[in-house]
Amino acid sequence: AVVSTQSGHYGRALVKPRIVKKRTKKFTRHQSDRYAKIDGTSWRKPKGIDNRVRRRFKGQFLMPSIGYGSNKNTRHLMPDGFLKFVVHNVADLELLLMQNKRYAAEIAHDVSAKKRKAIVERAQQLNIKVTNWQAKLRSEEDN
Image (cartoon, rainbow, N blue to C red; front, side, top):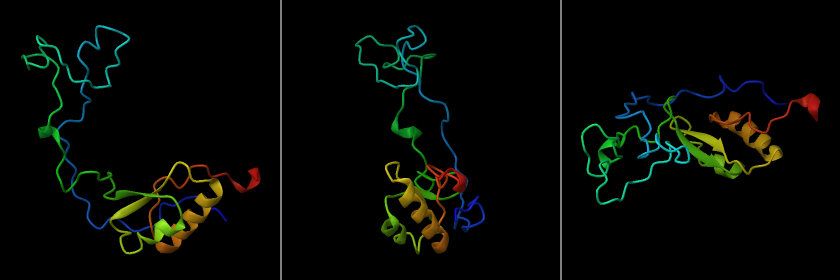
């Protein structure tokens, strides 16, 4: 039987530190506001010899640098305090047996619906959170 919700079937994260981002906005690409063909969200480093963004003139777009990196303790952390672990089969789930308060399983996108069902059921037994447990899941009346 497929469970309707998985919200109460796993424990809380062991620690849930406050995640502080140094910058939440995406870095915009130089001249993406000028040309429609240039996508503003896809960052490319300017390489021109006279480029004012590369030379970091005042009032220009900011460039990504190592200083914007996240805190080592909260890097890759989801807002609920868990770290993601990609799972391809039930055996991969067994690796999280002792780490179910630190890591949450995420079923890989190429896993079939039949195996997904088995992974979700085993995760409930092991008290492991599955982030995408609803994906490719059909209700009983559809089958």
